[in-house]
Amino acid sequence: MARSSAAVASPWSTPEERAREREQKREAVLGTAVRFFNTKGFHATSLDDVALALNVTKPTIYHYFASKDEVLFECVRRGLESIRESATTAAAHGGTGRERLRTMLLDYAIVMTKDFGICVSRTQDTQLSPDSRTRFRALKREIDIIIRHVIEEGIADGSIKAGDPRLATFTVTGALNWIAHWYDPEGRMSAQDVAEGTVAMLLTGLSPGGKD
Amino acid sequence: MARSSAAVASPWSTPEERAREREQKREAVLGTAVRFFNTKGFHATSLDDVALALNVTKPTIYHYFASKDEVLFECVRRGLESIRESATTAAAHGGTGRERLRTMLLDYAIVMTKDFGICVSRTQDTQLSPDSRTRFRALKREIDIIIRHVIEEGIADGSIKAGDPRLATFTVTGALNWIAHWYDPEGRMSAQDVAEGTVAMLLTGLSPGGKD
DNA sequence: ACAGTTGTTTACTCGTCAGTATACCTCTTA
DNA sequence: TAAGAGGTATACTGACGAGTAAACAACTGT
Image (cartoon, rainbow over all chains, first blue to last red; front, side, top):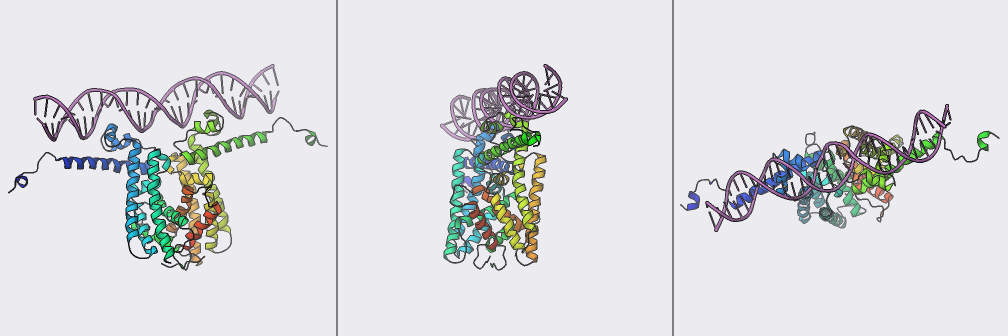
């Protein structure tokens, strides 16, 4: 037997393990912070609150993040990345524009029922530092463009009917973002129900005669 | 000639005039404050900012309002009142549910392009005091109920097709509220264009075959 | 003229909170 | 075993901003 496999579980950690632990602690800070931000609001949440909930003190948080702004930005970045990834994936799928749009919007809606998604929807760019704000806007814009593209493709292939694609994008993202403001995980509807219901309504509208 | 009509313009003001002036000053505070709230955010706006913009000092504002919270609440109350009034009026109109809903949503959308409407959409209830928050929620709820009712009536008379009326209400109000987050008065679209486009999209959806 | 009311200012208090200086402790590595 | 790096705590600074005390000024009504 090789020496490495003969060793019993070592009480000493490898550099990789240490890096992973550090990463886990960073995650824990974000996970705790995002819940505070979502329930109390960003400004009403102090890093002392977050630290206390994690049984540490504020300087510990500053060991993992440079500023409160960085904590918030990291939260919204995670939410936006989720959306962007699923949107990019859906955009690359086959099918009509409408089919791809539906996939995209369903994923978007689901993200809006989770902590980081909720944080994205509730965060106003005035809460971020000028730098983070620029990056925040850029990420949102990327997502908007992906959605708008697929809408335009749907119009081109005849599977979508919309006057102004830009306005259509704002309308659907608005309805979807709003989920973060009212969705209650304890309520009667599951995230899946909400997502499917909202997306169906956006695609078919409220008038009779719409089909999908 | 009666004595009152013989008098030249008096340099002394009547109690009514004084009350009106006081009311005008209150309005001026609200008008200035709401613009600051909308551009810089509520927390980032100090009453010193507002006072400075009005060429007065902070205690003057406290002469007209009891607290910063009251200023904010008054702003959102005005926005919500506009919506509620037009919704109530539209609900009392004749026509099918869908026709009344369209009127309602058009007015709602227009409010969302104005200062107090924008403030409503951007204000999170965590920013308000517990008391104001309760009243804020109650007002929003009233509006939701009016809209939900008209949707239910539309379903009953066959002019509207929707799975869950509650979900439908959230979807349309979400899309409409979102206008406050992206609408730019300097942009190419007028408030009227935005309102009509958004409402049309909500009623007919994005799939081909919808009609309205 | 004088007492009261309204509106405004100057100058202050007080609490909160982001962010930091510094020390200490523990584990790693040479 | 000593030097260093990583992680945490105590104790602090400094700014900001809501709200107030107290005085002053103007006007009103008696």
